Amino acid sequence: MVDFISGPRWFFGIDSLFETISILVSFLIAVFVYRIYKLTGQKKYRNFSVAFLMISAGLSFKILSNFVVFYTEVEKSFYGLFTVTYIKDLDFINIIAFFFYRLLIVGAFIIILASLLKIKDKKMLGLLTIFAFIGVVIGHDTYFIFHLILALILGIITYHYHENYKLKKSNNSLLVMLAFLFIFLSQIIFIFLIFADDLYAVGESLMLFGFLLLLAAYINILRK
Image (cartoon, rainbow, N blue to C red; front, side):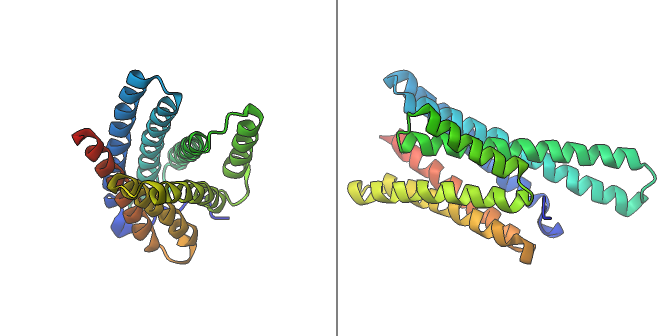
């Protein structure tokens, strides 16, 4: 079972930097979209704001999880297992942090998907949430299932923005479509991480680029 892979050791720290940038971008977008909600009163903007706040929080938990994995390895490497309970405590923190990372990230993109598709049926939303929760939290191969479910959700979101771009043909619609495309591709790469650790760096880079494109789109909106 592959439950969590932290990637190649040479990339440790760089991934946290990438994710920190993505956290800041997500937070800025959340604040910006919330201001639009306050001006327009449209619930979809409130939903987007909540979703991007969840992404920001989820990535924060991922940084914590990565740090714990690295720190545990350092302890084992330099000191052996002289404090077994302490290492177990670190493992527990890692499990909890990664749990909240998965939960918040999947929940965030479900909110975005539901808003884009205008899903208002509470039963449908409930079934979608339960399906994702079971797959991500209770599934046997949680790492694989997490990224597979996320890729499926992001694939639908990307398709939606692709159709939106075909209608509008604007620079912003292109940027948003490409942003979600790169985030979608990052999840595809993460699925195959079990075959090569170095793919982790590729996936993280694609995800960061996707968030930077989102930032560029919202900067363009602000300029207008």
